[in-house]
Image (cartoon, rainbow, N blue to C red):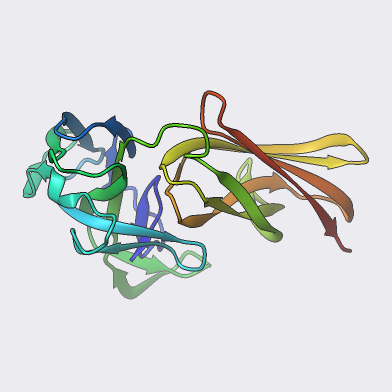
Length: 274
């Protein structure tokens, strides 16, 4: 299963306006705690459609990988898991049209817990109604698909290790990919900047990532990604949406602002060929 921290969308085909699910609370929970401490949190989700919707809440472990993105596994199956510290009411919830539900969860850190970062996830998911698949010409077919909408709330506990060097963020291997975006209802060519985002430190953090593109020393484009989760020893690919860059030589300045004095940067040279 693929993990994306804003929303995990499985089997994305066609338009699904008849029924949908949204989570209105933060999807990244970074919790600085100490051994023996307890944290009470809440996750609120809403049925934004005109139809009833059954929503399931469950737990999982997750792992970030530059090559494979995010992967989910059974709770407690990874060495860095804190799933055993997290208690949540894992059961189905039936929501009427427009109804919201708030589900509490608790994090109880054991007295013997060692310093370091541990993490797991709380999943909120629903099966959306079966939808017909349309052809590019808009004609209906006899094929329908089942869409599962899944939101992943990461629960990351951080014990100790808050000094210099606890967070070490870096970027590597930038690439540009041609893309298409819809502007004023029309598809327009564009570029996506893909950069590996790594945390070589020992403490998890979140960061505001900024990509600044220069040509001849003058800025030509900028893009940001907020609340990017950086787990120690793990990496991911950050994707920045840019306008279509004409052929030429460019300098890219990458910044990762983790708050306070923890700001990291890198420079890369890129060439766009005709």
